[in-house]
Length: 153
Image (cartoon, rainbow, N blue to C red; front, side, top):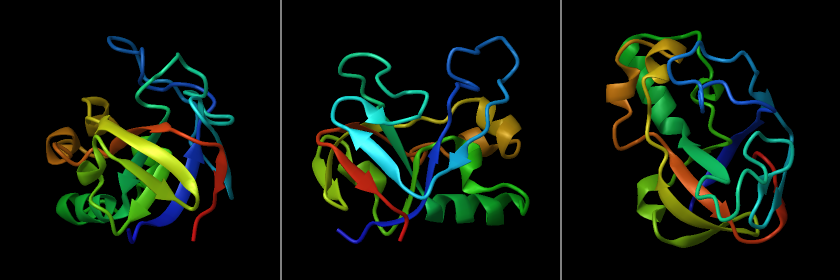
């Protein structure tokens, strides 16, 4: 696999999850120099860490190439990849191809569970039309299978 890690993000609180029909939260996505992952729990310090037993979205991946494409498509120059609120920003790997598969990144094993489907909040957070543009490329939800540490390359 040629997956490269560009950014690692955590957030202590949910901004959109559980906010349907309410205003979005204001918790920032915090870029971290390394992420400590725990099997069956996620990334230490993240809002989904230990969220619930066997949760399919313990961590989320998002393709840097998708962010670049959306920036070009919508002429956006003032939104970082963190706006999508995914934990691990990657390049060089079709993330949908990992659904239902075990894979390894920097010695940490994951199980790809499902697409991290975009929602209507993407139209506010990034640009009107972003939700539709992200169909089938909203990222990957995964379970953490072993403890380890990830670092951007």
